[in-house]
Length: 466
Image (cartoon, rainbow, N blue to C red; front, side, top):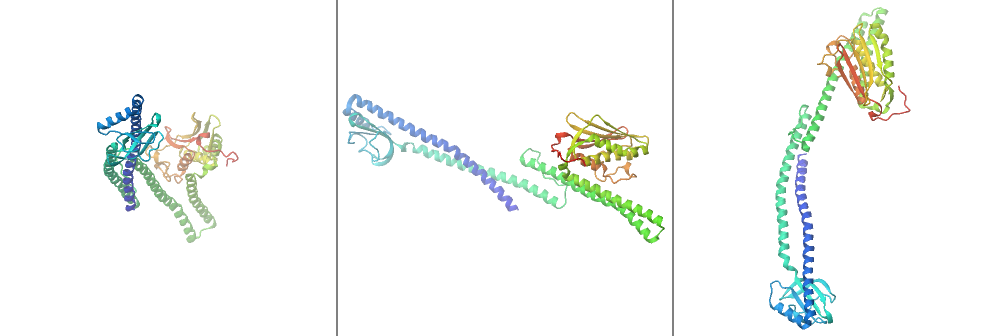
């Protein structure tokens, strides 16, 4: 693993250097091309102008005059003098500093490049050939080696730039490699600590906005969520063990007492009914947990259909109305009009039932419970259940929707602490939230869900509400 990390960092460093060299070469290539084109075209243009001046001398003085002009010019021995040759139609030399017509230069006028013996050494030159009246020929050339020192300096400069860039790039690459390995080492230490069970460890950050810090912050948020989930699973497991121990212990005690005392049939059947109630309590816990697991997986989203939430709430209120009247609690529903949402009708009915059941459980006699349905202009639907019971202290409100959480006010009441957990899970499944606020007095539980097409889920038109 270490070797792979070092190899990757080394590759990054080498790639950094090679990229810089390639960029320099790509920059130098157009310059070299422009240099070659400029020098070649400029040299040919100068030679053509010189040949035209010689042609003017021929027009004014004739062949003898041009020969004398060329010999006089050659006799001046000007530094870097051009190669000059004046011949007749048969390419016999009449004047100039070339001994004979160069091999490889055609008889046709134009610009050519070829080798020539000039002052006792072989030189490569560019020639301009023009044909004068009566078949006379003028050849003007220049040694291409004149600009060789400049070209050599160009290549030396490019090589020096590559060397300097390579050195600087290597130093920069090593620094980058060192920094990268340092950050990776910190990540490895954190991951190793987490693998050993120290879930509170987080990736080191430097408070900047670079890519590695952004990645570390994102991973840290993920680790926070994982730690919370693990602690949640641990707490749920402990809560399940605690809540199952009581009914199972009661069930075992009842059955053991029946086995030892063997009471009369009436007492036996009474104890059996109580044992069945204990089993039902255990089954209800598992049913609630299975329902939460099903909601958390999001499988129910595929069955979303248009749901008249006002109709669902009406049925829930009608179901709990006899229990409310028996307790002396006024239960009422307020809904302005039919409100249609995209969702699972069974889960929505379960969530509303849990909120009403929770309110009815803690509302004292002669109290009141109100179910309000409203839809905002942005398409958000709100279902609020308000009571005038003891409410929930502010310190317990953030934990009220946690699984198996039971506040001080609910210690002596029946239940396992999963009612509001299911409501919160259903709201989250429908793209919403569960808010708990004071009703002064009492509690106001408000489930906020997306409505209509704002949910982003397609309706199954053939599916009917369950």
